[in-house]
Image (cartoon, rainbow, N blue to C red):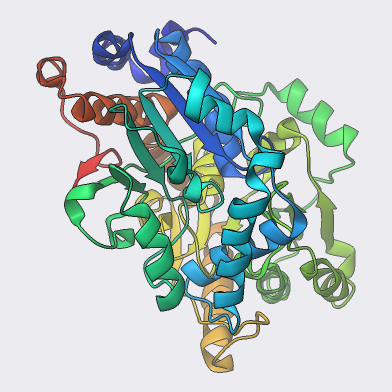
Length: 445
């Protein structure tokens, strides 16, 4: 996709800003590192952001950290504990994580070690999430800048793990989070940069009526009733059992269907939730519940367009790009008021926000009454949207405009370019950018 193709969506002025911000960085080399090249929001972002930076004339490379089962199990524990889930053996998981870097890193990731220590001559290294965080030990004393990009909700992390992780992060020049509430430590070392979607990917591009029908036929998706959907991983933080319970309450009032489409990332080993979801699916209204794995971005696109309401019932969330994806397709979203979701949903205007509830390590609620109230309110909002087509259309229009202004890849790239320029004191370039900053974009802390 050419940079100028985005003109039709964000305007020529925004594209000119990208080119201006790129001028002082064309002699720099950027390295992005994460732990998977497929599945999950981080991989999706890098798949589009890295080529965009290259097309702007900034040499940018994407490296993927390889790991073993024990390593990814440990980092899954990190993920849960950083999001506030108590973990009895977190010290052991830290030892496993550190042990991987001590004994297995070079064996499985010689390509990254060679790049960082010898061949890449990088000026800026951006490390995504905890998996590759400890790569900072291979930083050269050559003036390069290192940035840690944390994508999850770290508002209330486990104290032991938080001390370890933020001790490592302190060695970075900057840490990027999606929301200011995720900042831990010295605010001057943080940047708030929400993630984004690309309107030209298969997942988000416009579909003609003919294309939409073809995709729905291919996957046997019925459209004879209103559709509620959630597209997410099957883990306790996405609350798939709660999604089914919401549907069952809605179904008592409105004859509709639920599509629970799940995906997975290569670095996410949590799959035991499947048995519980399948059992719940086989209970009441089972004929109107559709559960399947989704690995086709065009199918995700079609599902979000054909849905009358999209749910994002996360109990913890870094940002939830699935919300922006649905809003971009003019579909209202009912979601839990956690993480970066309130940045995207304006209550009553493009969807509804519902207070969440706390869960134990096994995913069960700490307080069953809190859960029951949450399910009831979520169902109530879904019924409200399904019952009022005029409101649904108005919400859809409003939602798309919020995403266009705040959560597209062009704004995301601009935020990164401004940060890169800041790190190398390219202030003259930044001062030439006179446009106002959208509400969703980079905030200095």
